[in-house]
Length: 234
Ligand code: ATP
Image (cartoon, rainbow, N blue to C red; front, top):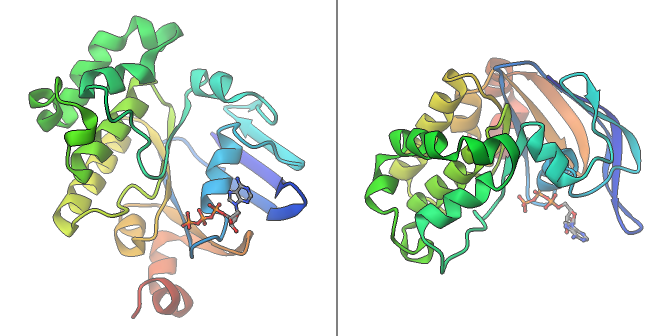
């Protein structure tokens, strides 16, 4: 479904990603692990069309999207839930959700999509008129995920969805991600909560200083001493 071939990404003169290749098949969950500054967010931003790779190619559902703009990529069904949620705090839950469905097919289907989001996160239905800035961290993450779903993603990318959340809420967020996947959406997950992320993934890869240093099935990574020591503290 998504095929990344040998991309190099720079911020100005500084190379952040080197020769990254990755494939994601339809309905898979794939996780990218890596320490702070490894380049995980940069990878997702490159796929989302926010940063253009200097070299290499990105293909989504058989179409070359390298260099396509971010709006076009969202309309194709490749959607990112950003790190830190990035909500509009002085707007209501409903208004924030609607921002995910401003154009095209997503706009036409926004009423059904809102019902689907409320079914996934019933708490948001009770709080739909509440200002997003007054929600708990977990509820804000639900709104960010819901806004992503409003764009009718075929592939949904999550940038550290568990960041700053209490353990019980983290569990809830991962359960929601699994349900989204079961309903047919392919998932690319960037996470520091390696245990949770790999447990619900088919495959994973480890990024270090902008390079893929390890990849394999989620099971093999969970068993790998290097992963256990560096990312799980075992
Ligand atoms: P974290 O878990 O801390 O978010 P990450 O793996 O997602 O880390 P990135 O955010 O992709 O890492 O950052 C990779 C490198 O790129 C870092 O060294 C960072 O300082 C640098 N960087 C990120 N954004 C920019 C930018 N807009 N301009 C210049 N350098 C940047």
